[in-house]
Image (cartoon, helix red, strand yellow):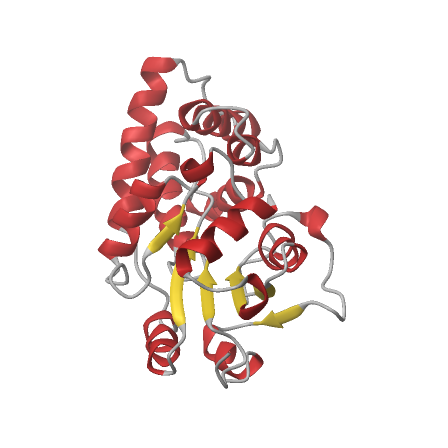
Amino acid sequence: MTGRPVDGVLFDVDDTLVDTHGAFAQALAAVRERWLPHLDAAGDTALLDHWRADAGGRYRQYTRGEVGYREQRMARANDLHAAFGGPVLDDAAYDRWNALFEERFTGAWAAHDDAAAVVRHLLDAGVRVGALTNAATAYQVAKLTAVGLVDEVPLLVGVDTLGFGKPDPRVFAEACSRLGTAPGRTAYVGDELDVDARAAAAAGLRGVWLARPGLGAKDANAGEPAPSDVVITTLAELPGVLGL
Protein backbone atom coordinates (compact mmCIF):
# COMPACT_ATOMS: atom_id res chain seq x y z
CA MET A 1 0.00 0.00 0.00
CA THR A 2 1.35 3.40 -0.99
CA GLY A 3 0.99 6.62 0.95
CA ARG A 4 -1.34 7.96 -1.75
CA PRO A 5 -5.09 7.97 -1.08
CA VAL A 6 -5.69 6.39 -4.53
CA ASP A 7 -3.54 4.30 -6.86
CA GLY A 8 -5.53 4.88 -10.02
CA VAL A 9 -7.96 7.23 -11.73
CA LEU A 10 -10.28 6.15 -14.52
CA PHE A 11 -11.82 8.84 -16.70
CA ASP A 12 -14.91 8.94 -18.82
CA VAL A 13 -14.09 10.45 -22.24
CA ASP A 14 -17.02 12.46 -23.53
CA ASP A 15 -17.59 15.80 -21.78
CA THR A 16 -15.00 14.76 -19.20
CA LEU A 17 -11.73 14.82 -21.14
CA VAL A 18 -13.11 15.79 -24.56
CA ASP A 19 -15.52 18.65 -25.29
CA THR A 20 -18.13 16.46 -26.93
CA HIS A 21 -20.85 19.00 -26.13
CA GLY A 22 -19.14 21.55 -28.36
CA ALA A 23 -18.53 19.01 -31.12
CA PHE A 24 -22.18 17.93 -31.06
CA ALA A 25 -23.21 21.57 -31.32
CA GLN A 26 -21.23 21.99 -34.54
CA ALA A 27 -22.49 18.72 -36.01
CA LEU A 28 -26.13 19.53 -35.26
CA ALA A 29 -25.79 23.03 -36.70
CA ALA A 30 -24.74 21.41 -39.96
CA VAL A 31 -27.66 18.99 -39.75
CA ARG A 32 -30.03 21.91 -39.19
CA GLU A 33 -28.76 23.75 -42.26
CA ARG A 34 -29.12 20.69 -44.50
CA TRP A 35 -32.09 18.78 -43.11
CA LEU A 36 -34.10 21.32 -41.10
CA PRO A 37 -33.85 24.44 -43.28
CA HIS A 38 -37.05 25.90 -41.83
CA LEU A 39 -35.20 26.48 -38.55
CA ASP A 40 -32.74 29.29 -37.96
CA ALA A 41 -29.60 29.32 -35.84
CA ALA A 42 -31.59 30.43 -32.81
CA GLY A 43 -32.92 26.88 -32.56
CA ASP A 44 -29.51 25.23 -32.29
CA THR A 45 -29.57 25.16 -28.49
CA ALA A 46 -32.89 23.32 -28.51
CA LEU A 47 -31.53 20.81 -31.02
CA LEU A 48 -28.47 20.17 -28.88
CA ASP A 49 -30.51 19.81 -25.69
CA HIS A 50 -32.82 17.32 -27.40
CA TRP A 51 -29.90 15.29 -28.75
CA ARG A 52 -28.10 15.13 -25.41
CA ALA A 53 -31.25 14.31 -23.44
CA ASP A 54 -32.02 11.32 -25.71
CA ALA A 55 -35.47 11.02 -24.16
CA GLY A 56 -36.08 7.75 -26.00
CA GLY A 57 -33.16 6.15 -24.22
CA ARG A 58 -31.68 5.00 -27.52
CA TYR A 59 -28.04 5.20 -26.50
CA ARG A 60 -28.63 3.44 -23.22
CA GLN A 61 -30.30 0.61 -25.11
CA TYR A 62 -27.05 0.36 -27.06
CA THR A 63 -24.89 0.37 -23.93
CA ARG A 64 -27.02 -2.42 -22.47
CA GLY A 65 -26.31 -4.49 -25.59
CA GLU A 66 -29.94 -4.44 -26.72
CA VAL A 67 -29.46 -2.74 -30.11
CA GLY A 68 -26.58 -2.04 -32.50
CA TYR A 69 -24.83 1.28 -32.92
CA ARG A 70 -26.36 2.13 -36.30
CA GLU A 71 -29.85 1.25 -35.08
CA GLN A 72 -29.64 3.57 -32.09
CA ARG A 73 -28.03 6.42 -34.03
CA MET A 74 -30.61 6.26 -36.82
CA ALA A 75 -33.42 6.16 -34.27
CA ARG A 76 -31.99 9.23 -32.51
CA ALA A 77 -31.74 11.07 -35.83
CA ASN A 78 -35.38 10.29 -36.60
CA ASP A 79 -36.41 11.27 -33.06
CA LEU A 80 -34.72 14.62 -33.65
CA HIS A 81 -36.45 15.11 -36.99
CA ALA A 82 -39.82 14.14 -35.53
CA ALA A 83 -39.41 16.73 -32.78
CA PHE A 84 -38.32 19.55 -35.09
CA GLY A 85 -40.25 18.91 -38.28
CA GLY A 86 -37.66 17.10 -40.36
CA PRO A 87 -38.22 14.31 -42.89
CA VAL A 88 -38.26 10.66 -41.93
CA LEU A 89 -34.86 9.16 -42.74
CA ASP A 90 -34.77 5.84 -44.54
CA ASP A 91 -31.49 3.91 -44.75
CA ALA A 92 -30.14 5.84 -47.72
CA ALA A 93 -31.09 9.23 -46.32
CA TYR A 94 -29.65 8.32 -42.93
CA ASP A 95 -26.34 7.40 -44.55
CA ARG A 96 -26.13 10.93 -45.97
CA TRP A 97 -27.27 12.44 -42.67
CA ASN A 98 -24.70 10.53 -40.68
CA ALA A 99 -21.86 11.27 -43.09
CA LEU A 100 -22.46 15.00 -42.61
CA PHE A 101 -22.88 14.62 -38.87
CA GLU A 102 -19.67 12.61 -38.47
CA GLU A 103 -17.65 14.94 -40.69
CA ARG A 104 -18.52 17.95 -38.55
CA PHE A 105 -18.45 16.06 -35.25
CA THR A 106 -15.02 14.47 -35.65
CA GLY A 107 -13.61 17.66 -37.10
CA ALA A 108 -14.58 19.54 -33.93
CA TRP A 109 -13.02 17.17 -31.38
CA ALA A 110 -10.94 19.06 -28.81
CA ALA A 111 -9.76 18.37 -25.28
CA HIS A 112 -11.20 20.38 -22.44
CA ASP A 113 -8.76 23.05 -21.29
CA ASP A 114 -8.40 21.47 -17.85
CA ALA A 115 -7.73 17.89 -19.02
CA ALA A 116 -4.04 17.68 -19.92
CA ALA A 117 -2.72 19.46 -16.83
CA VAL A 118 -4.72 17.31 -14.41
CA VAL A 119 -3.71 14.10 -16.15
CA ARG A 120 -0.07 15.17 -15.93
CA HIS A 121 -0.51 16.05 -12.23
CA LEU A 122 -1.85 12.56 -11.52
CA LEU A 123 0.88 10.81 -13.45
CA ASP A 124 3.58 12.88 -11.78
CA ALA A 125 2.10 11.84 -8.42
CA GLY A 126 2.54 8.19 -9.40
CA VAL A 127 -1.17 7.57 -10.01
CA ARG A 128 -2.14 5.22 -12.84
CA VAL A 129 -4.54 6.72 -15.36
CA GLY A 130 -6.86 5.19 -17.94
CA ALA A 131 -10.23 5.63 -19.62
CA LEU A 132 -13.52 3.74 -19.41
CA THR A 133 -16.20 4.75 -21.88
CA ASN A 134 -19.67 3.77 -23.06
CA ALA A 135 -18.66 4.22 -26.70
CA ALA A 136 -16.84 1.82 -29.03
CA THR A 137 -13.16 1.34 -28.29
CA ALA A 138 -11.76 2.20 -31.72
CA TYR A 139 -13.91 5.33 -31.96
CA GLN A 140 -12.74 6.60 -28.59
CA VAL A 141 -9.11 5.76 -29.27
CA ALA A 142 -9.40 7.90 -32.40
CA LYS A 143 -10.95 10.68 -30.31
CA LEU A 144 -8.24 10.58 -27.64
CA THR A 145 -5.60 10.47 -30.38
CA ALA A 146 -7.08 13.49 -32.12
CA VAL A 147 -6.99 15.57 -28.93
CA GLY A 148 -3.48 14.44 -27.93
CA LEU A 149 -4.35 12.41 -24.82
CA VAL A 150 -4.16 8.79 -25.95
CA ASP A 151 -0.59 8.19 -24.78
CA GLU A 152 -1.25 9.44 -21.26
CA VAL A 153 -4.82 8.17 -20.94
CA PRO A 154 -4.98 4.74 -22.59
CA LEU A 155 -8.47 3.52 -23.46
CA LEU A 156 -8.93 0.44 -21.29
CA VAL A 157 -12.61 -0.49 -21.66
CA GLY A 158 -15.23 0.46 -24.24
CA VAL A 159 -18.81 -0.65 -24.65
CA ASP A 160 -17.64 -3.37 -27.04
CA THR A 161 -15.12 -4.83 -24.57
CA LEU A 162 -17.74 -6.87 -22.71
CA GLY A 163 -20.70 -6.16 -24.98
CA PHE A 164 -22.33 -3.72 -22.55
CA GLY A 165 -21.35 -0.63 -20.63
CA LYS A 166 -21.92 1.48 -17.53
CA PRO A 167 -23.65 1.34 -15.10
CA ASP A 168 -22.99 -2.42 -15.03
CA PRO A 169 -20.45 -3.00 -12.23
CA ARG A 170 -18.57 -5.54 -14.33
CA VAL A 171 -17.20 -2.86 -16.65
CA PHE A 172 -15.74 -0.97 -13.70
CA ALA A 173 -14.17 -4.17 -12.38
CA GLU A 174 -12.70 -4.92 -15.80
CA ALA A 175 -11.26 -1.42 -16.11
CA CYS A 176 -9.65 -1.66 -12.66
CA SER A 177 -8.20 -5.04 -13.57
CA ARG A 178 -6.66 -3.61 -16.73
CA LEU A 179 -5.41 -0.55 -14.88
CA GLY A 180 -3.87 -2.82 -12.24
CA THR A 181 -5.54 -1.18 -9.26
CA ALA A 182 -8.05 -2.36 -6.67
CA PRO A 183 -11.53 -0.81 -7.00
CA GLY A 184 -11.31 0.66 -3.50
CA ARG A 185 -8.09 2.41 -4.46
CA THR A 186 -9.45 3.71 -7.77
CA ALA A 187 -11.48 6.82 -8.58
CA TYR A 188 -13.81 7.13 -11.55
CA VAL A 189 -14.57 10.58 -12.94
CA GLY A 190 -17.42 11.24 -15.35
CA ASP A 191 -20.00 13.81 -16.36
CA GLU A 192 -23.12 11.76 -15.55
CA LEU A 193 -24.23 11.51 -11.95
CA ASP A 194 -26.02 8.18 -12.27
CA VAL A 195 -24.10 6.02 -14.74
CA ASP A 196 -20.71 7.49 -13.85
CA ALA A 197 -20.29 8.65 -10.25
CA ARG A 198 -23.01 6.64 -8.53
CA ALA A 199 -22.47 3.52 -10.62
CA ALA A 200 -18.75 3.65 -9.90
CA ALA A 201 -19.42 4.00 -6.17
CA ALA A 202 -21.83 1.05 -6.30
CA ALA A 203 -19.05 -0.97 -7.93
CA GLY A 204 -16.70 -0.17 -5.08
CA LEU A 205 -14.77 2.71 -6.66
CA ARG A 206 -14.58 6.34 -5.56
CA GLY A 207 -17.13 7.97 -7.85
CA VAL A 208 -16.67 11.62 -8.79
CA TRP A 209 -19.27 13.60 -10.74
CA LEU A 210 -17.84 16.28 -13.01
CA ALA A 211 -20.71 18.77 -13.29
CA ARG A 212 -19.31 21.26 -15.77
CA PRO A 213 -21.23 24.57 -15.64
CA GLY A 214 -23.54 25.24 -18.56
CA LEU A 215 -23.79 21.66 -19.82
CA GLY A 216 -26.87 20.62 -17.89
CA ALA A 217 -27.79 17.07 -16.94
CA LYS A 218 -27.90 14.42 -19.64
CA ASP A 219 -30.52 12.48 -17.72
CA ALA A 220 -33.10 14.37 -15.69
CA ASN A 221 -33.98 11.10 -13.92
CA ALA A 222 -30.63 11.20 -12.10
CA GLY A 223 -32.01 13.92 -9.82
CA GLU A 224 -30.00 16.30 -7.70
CA PRO A 225 -26.71 15.35 -6.01
CA ALA A 226 -26.96 13.95 -2.50
CA PRO A 227 -24.60 14.82 0.37
CA SER A 228 -22.80 11.53 -0.26
CA ASP A 229 -22.04 12.41 -3.90
CA VAL A 230 -18.58 13.80 -4.67
CA VAL A 231 -19.09 16.71 -7.08
CA ILE A 232 -16.55 18.89 -8.89
CA THR A 233 -17.14 21.55 -11.54
CA THR A 234 -13.71 21.39 -13.18
CA LEU A 235 -11.02 18.74 -13.40
CA ALA A 236 -8.68 21.18 -11.67
CA GLU A 237 -10.57 20.33 -8.46
CA LEU A 238 -9.91 16.60 -8.80
CA PRO A 239 -6.50 16.34 -7.08
CA GLY A 240 -7.92 18.18 -4.09
CA VAL A 241 -10.95 15.94 -3.60
CA LEU A 242 -8.71 12.89 -3.97
CA GLY A 243 -6.24 14.17 -1.40
CA LEU A 244 -3.48 14.64 -3.96
